[in-house]
Amino acid sequence: MLKNKLDLRKIFFAIVAGFLSAFVIKIIISHPSVELLPDGIGGFSMLFSRVVSSDNSHSNILVYFILYITLNIPILIFGLKKIGKQHFIYSSLAVLLHSIFVLIIPGELRTILQLDQIDNQLLMAILAGLVMGYAVSLVYSNGFSFAGINSIGGYLAEKFDRKTENYTIAFNLILLLVALFLFNSFILVIYSLVYIFTKSLSISMFYVRNKKVLLQIVSSKGEEIASKLLANTKYTCTIYDVIGGYSKEDKKQLNMVIYYGELKETIKMIKNTDPESFTTVLEVRNSYGGNFDHSRDD
Image (cartoon, rainbow, N blue to C red; front, side, top):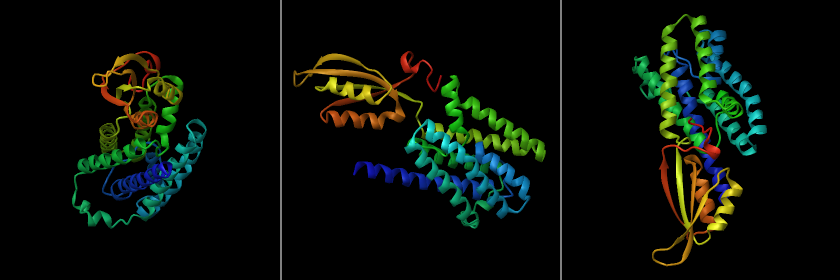
């Protein structure tokens, strides 16, 4: 039952994120009055669609739809091999929903929401970045993604001990340089950079994966909890002998540093092992050694 609920929750967030991300593409970015490009695979798809479709917005969206799905298929298969089946299933769902929503969201929604009354491209770039960043944070927080260049960048970062951002920034810079060459528009590059920067800030605000926390777990089943955590996570822990102040019983205190994004599943494991355990969560500014020697926010 719990597994089914978890699946339904992921499907729900995939739908929400797919709609929001498609809204940004269809209602804001693809509109002729907005001169900017998204980043990553979406940016490449949008760039190509503008080159081959000229000012025909319907053809523009259709080409974007075909190219976005086509380019993400090998990336999704790559994720299946390197990350796992669950990530593949929900990432594929997110990509598919995004693509379908891009096709079916009515362009009239722009008028209904009075976005056509905003003639400030800077505001539109910021709005697009905020909404897209929130959509991306939804899928990241639930353990999957929109595939795209970030998935490849994440793998390369793990393999070659570099920041993921190094690879995605390089790709996006090349994309913008090509756009500058094709359209001879510095305005497009400037507002695209504003969009990308705002999106990054939005993801950082809503998705706190890189934030570390210290768990202090007090339990009479400390050894069992330690075995469970060591078997199901990549982290180790330190165990202390303590005495309950009220019960005067001998207990164990476990100290363990993890990423915030892994907190929910870790707490669930602890509670399943000992419902009477007491866990304190403290924010960690940084940590060194063990699995954090080459941490994701170095």
